[in-house]
Length: 402
Image (cartoon, rainbow, N blue to C red; front, top):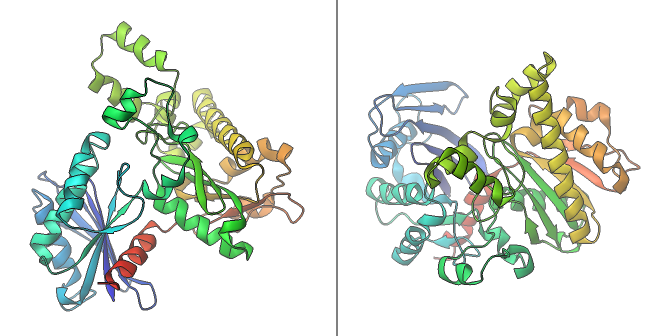
């Protein structure tokens, strides 16, 4: 069985083709700048060569045509015919209160994803475009599966997901905490349990997905009890360009002083804040780190704020869980920023965390393993996340029941 995994954004489309016999990635690539004159597809050939082609992609249907052509390319293709693709799995950001697990795509599912678009206006419409474009290019007979970022967080209790605002806004508009990065948190939860040689149903874990977008999740007995992102991915701690959670009066105060519209405020909080906003340098942590090394005080402050906020959430989740067996670092920064892990773990010494600083310093660029010292009271692990594999496995499981 070969599964095509799709992650469609508003102007991009990432894909992987995975052979589920041995879970080997046969092909992967990315369509960028869909809808512009500068659109192109970049992909890796089966032998690892990187290819980039400029091509017309005015919409997602044309992007899928480019993906199809890359997959069956006479020279670089991974398959001879599209008939080799058994099914397609789609990442969908917002599943709202409807979806607590992955589902086979049908008209009802599509309509519900559309209905939830106001909660994820940049993502859900793009996912619909991806699903519909897939149907046009691959045909209606190829089954498609939707895997939701929010599904893993459905086990959160009301006391964790509700906001202290008039209850009518929850009833009328579904205003509550949903959480995101669910496929990543789910993957590393299962992996951590395997590494510890224990069932996840008996563990208390804190999983830290830290990248340009970041979230931390408390998992008790295999179920999420709390997570940092909220109604949207803006909630929680500061990220590359996102502010994270704020005193709400900060928003109304700035709006009044600067005479800003909701859209203008959203742009500031989502695109101009976080590491970029504080450092004034970049949203890319590599640039912020270089500036800090050169003595840039605002870059240093941005990092100090980030480390402090991550440690705060881990500490609060330690309390919420009633203890902790393991902490996982994953995603771009979590996997490749030793300084971040060390600084965060320095705050956690009061909980009995002891870091193996020598291993931590070299654990990056694909190096994973146990970051904590043998006498640490809490195991700390570096795990490379694999959201695409979660999507592929869910797709396989659903298709096998058809």
